[in-house]
Amino acid sequence: MGAGDEPRPFRRTLCDYPRQIVRAQTPYHSYRSLGGLTVENASNDCDVLVVGAGPTGLMAANLLKRAGVNVRLVEQRGEATRESRAFAVQARTLELMDSIGLARNFLAQGVRADSVNIHVKGRFRGGLDFARANAGDTPYPFILMIPQSRLEAILSDDCSALGVSIERQTTVTAVEQDGQGVTTHADGADGPFRIRSAYVIGADGSRSIVRQATGLGWDGDMLPQRFLLADCKVHWPLDHESFRVFLNGSRIGLFLPLDGAKVSRVMATDVSGSFGDEDGSKPAPLDLAEMEEGLSKAIALPVRLSDPVWVTRYRAHHRFTDCYRANRAFIAGDAAHIHSPAGGQGMNTGLQDAANLAWKLAAVLRAGAKDGLLDSYDQERRPVGENVIKSTGRLFAAAAGQTGAKAAVRDQIISTVLPLLTRVSPFQKRAFFNTSQRAIAYPLGAYVSGTASKLAPPGARAPDAPVHAVGSVFALLRGYRFTILVFSREKLNEADTASITAAQTRLMARGLAIGIIAGAQPDEDVVFQRYGVGQNPGQAVVLVRPDGYIAWRGESLSLDLCESHAAMIMPRRGISDAS
Ligand SMILES: Cc1cc2nc3c(=O)[nH]c(=O)nc-3n(C[C@H](O)[C@H](O)[C@H](O)COP(=O)(O)OP(=O)(O)OC[C@H]3O[C@@H](n4cnc5c(N)ncnc54)[C@H](O)[C@@H]3O)c2cc1C
Image 1 (cartoon, helix red, strand yellow):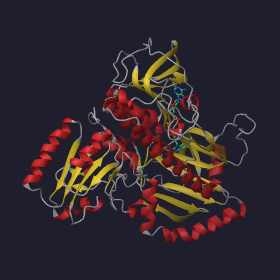
Image 2 (cartoon, helix red, strand yellow):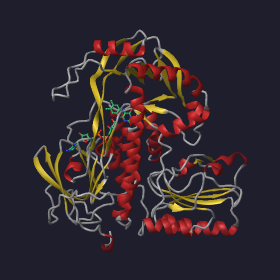
Image 3 (cartoon, rainbow, N blue to C red):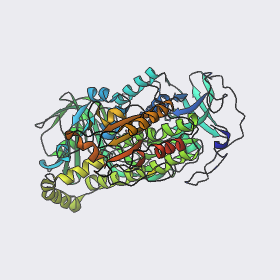
Image 4 (tube, protein in one colour):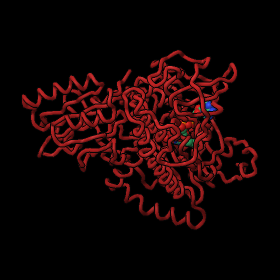
């Protein structure tokens, strides 16, 4: 980082808040130093310290390493967790995994759910049918059910292959910042020690020490509804392949397919009053008989449960921070936002937080980007987190928040309206667009600009489409790096070919990839349509960020403005994908 681009010491971020715990600190070599030189400060132990090896921390460490950043990952747990809170992996997450070559590992270990079936008082009434959603712009038009523990194992194995190991039995106890960096205090197997880094990411879950130590806010409530949860064998008259929601007055039930008839996740309303958290006591243990009774009342069908893998009582919270950044400290995932599991969004949102932040840190550390780029992490991701909390809250309240007459009316309305809605394609399309997280787009600003377009505008996710020779747009976007897509409906003439070839050499030397989609074949119109490249002028240039969002767009073949935008983000060079 150039001297002129140093973060101003003790500056407040846009989400202004008195959140500094700062002590003057002289940089030093800690006794746990890896000896790796950092770009920013040769006496740091690493450029970025990631706290917490849950899904968010693993993703952040993985992507930072791919972008060439010297990263360390610490985790308080001695071994990987076997409990699996999350199961639903959305299309947008699979697209991210696709970009780093891991999607096939996920598909091999998960179960594809093509619908969400809703039953009222035991009768199937309709629901989400992803086949009707016409989601041709993603290779993943479904929800993948894969236990969080398996997702973590895939990311952790990939981190090892990249050279990032999880430093286990390491509990972070305090975080201090000064103008030059961050000092993180931790308790390890050999006693307390400190790690000095340029930046720290708190991916340390809802009780985040990084959030607390930096004074970031945390506001919200515990939701009143309580649930029984079990991963077990389910014996019932229905199949074990479909995602099902059961409404029955004040009782609701949930069935998630995991591993055929062998193991499934079931949840049901807990009306026992044994949760125990109001008076500080521990919840009463749950046994399978109580789970079975609760579930059978919710689903209004005969059911028997056996072979439990995990059984617990569960109560959701919704809580949110007021800022994702405190100078050199960032929070991501559950450290920044927690909410009900309705809609299966939490883990997916954390993974995308990591994808948004990692390249920005890499750009500042390795490519001379300005500190303001780091503010765009909060500007882009906080509204997404806020929206997830609102939308999952609404869904949860509609499904689980009703009792008595209100619940009876809800059941009546859903029984009448849902069979009709299920057949309406635009409803299915919109529902899948939102739940798959493909609808997320970022606002225009210093780092997101260019010409407006109805389709694929600056700030939107770059959609997939078939492309001759390479297979698809996503094949061109593979690698966690910037890619320039050049579109021309006509074949390129000699002059255009010469100037694009010259630019290609220049751009590749700066670590940017370039993909050319020119001379539309008769069956190739769809890629031009999805990117909003009409007949006139029939040309466009689109700059796609490492996290798959459009950073800039222009409606001609001239690469100059696009190159200037890329150089404004990364004055020295691009983010290279080290994989
Ligand atoms: C019942 C249930 C079902 C869910 N289903 C879904 C779903 O289907 N889809 C979905 O997207 N989401 C779902 N979620 C939410 C999802 O589980 C979380 O959003 C996800 O685990 C968040 O990941 P994370 O890495 O941010 O935090 P965590 O998973 O909480 O990981 C934080 C890590 O930090 C470590 N840590 C904490 N403090 C320290 C410290 N001081 N020092 C070092 N390490 C520390 C912890 O040990 C932990 O490993 C569900 C949640 C629940 C409860």
